[in-house]
Length: 251
Image 1 (tube, rainbow, N blue to C red):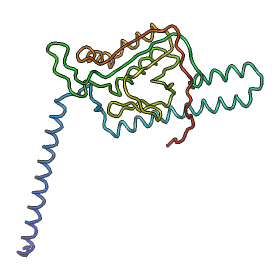
Image 2 (image 1 turned 90 degrees about the vertical axis):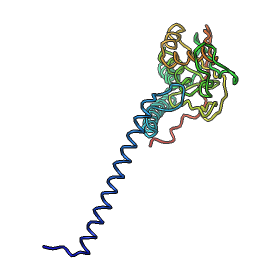
Image 3 (image 1 turned 60 degrees about the vertical axis):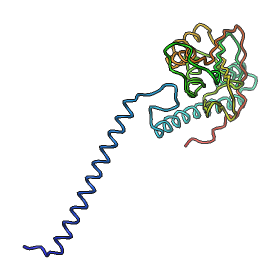
Image 4 (image 1 turned 180 degrees about the vertical axis):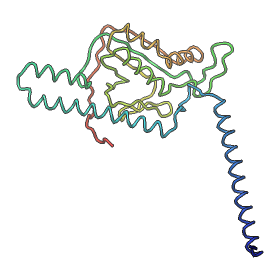
């Protein structure tokens, strides 16, 4: 069976176009693989805000955590409200209600504890240790991960309550930094950042000293002069959380 000349030319042209497209796709894929390999070989820097996870993964992870925390807080608030309506003058009900309010961070907490202060390095700071490279902008400022590391370490150390700046943290509190400012529960703060925790001071201090992110931060304290101060106190008072506890969304 013979193919008409016009159709043969059309078929050969189509084959050439497909071949070129496949060739371009192969080169593009190879280039992408080389780029990924080069980026991976460079390693990661713990003093930047870059995440090891993709942005989508981080958003999904944070969203899931926030939903769980909000659901827990809403349940506590519902139980507290129910007891308020039912307790009357029963001392047992009143004691249970007080316990729920403390668990939701709505009541003040008092006792011994730690105060941790973090601060940016001086803007003209230089390397303080021989052999250490001169600092970049990211090396001289407090990052979100630094504040989060201290807060998480204090919770691991058994803190009965944690306060960042003048705000008591609850289960839905989120520490966020934009540039060198802190966003917390609708308010903006600048360094120095003061974090307080009530609890057993030995356990709190041990948890802070054992945290790997804090250890990394302390290397920059020595190298470039970032601010770091830990103070023990026999009598700290943290106010109860006074913001809204309404669950606005559970999507």
